[in-house]
Image 1 (cartoon, one colour):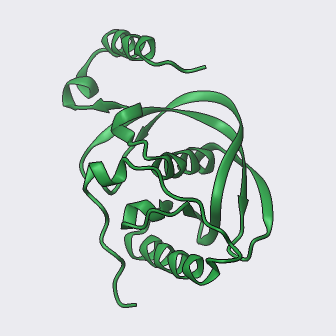
Image 2 (cartoon, helix red, strand yellow; image 1 turned 180 degrees about the horizontal axis):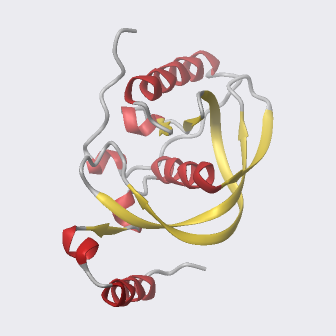
Image 3 (cartoon, rainbow, N blue to C red; image 1 turned 60 degrees about the vertical axis):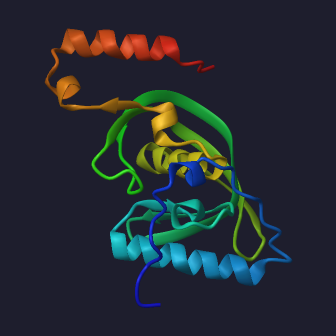
Length: 175
């Protein structure tokens, strides 16, 4: 491998749910996907990436924990706590930033590439990044769940921003 796979920029393609993997039957495919994702993380200096972002409609995520790359096959978020708004961007929508509601603490259950079932509690940035990647697996785009921030929003007064955010919150159906 000399270069990472191209990122997918087709929003219709990114907006499709990815397929689960059978670790026992698709082990070679999983290992190949994980290698591609790890290479993309290193080449692009990312904190996380999912298979759909490189055009593979399978449920695989790799997160970068300060250089320690962890693979998650068929991840499922089982518990969420403490919602906040985060300013986010994704490489598939360059130059765009969104305020996105995310949980500050999540429990995620997943399979390793060898099939072992594990669970982690992720906090803070790790929790936010995993939620972003699971959104990709579900076909949910950042533009579907976030509020796009533009220069006008950045330059607005605190009161104006609060009003805009309240209107945005009122438009969401978050339980």
